[in-house]
Length: 133
Image 1 (cartoon, rainbow, N blue to C red):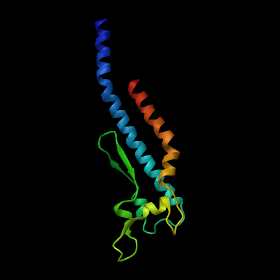
Image 2 (cartoon, rainbow, N blue to C red; image 1 turned 180 degrees about the horizontal axis):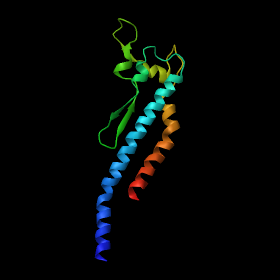
Image 3 (tube, helix red, strand yellow; image 1 turned 30 degrees about the vertical axis):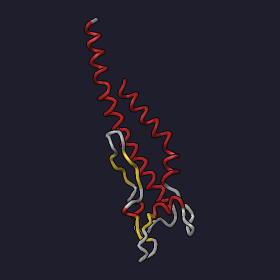
Image 4 (tube, rainbow, N blue to C red; image 1 turned 120 degrees about the horizontal axis):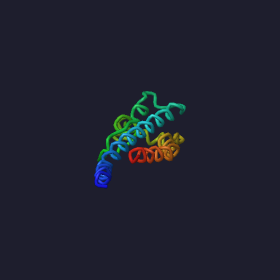
């Protein structure tokens, strides 16, 4: 009986580390999968940015802890002046996603996330189950 209790204690004590490692790896895999899918969605749009900067800006950044990754697009790579000499900067990733008064929206970021969200959640749930077994 004591051996069973010791074995259970070891299993339970090691469980948080196993879950953390498994889930952290899966969250990172899913973040890169989502970023790749968003980049692919951009490539399928007509008239994507001529420089390729918008596609290149689809990246994954570390979050505030080892279980958080930020899937992002836009930023420094896609920010430029609205009109040369205006001094007003605008991130044209936002123009693609939401449109402007001169350009229809060509959303790539949020629709891809919504399409993939259920699968991402399931993959993370599966990772927890793998760690527990």
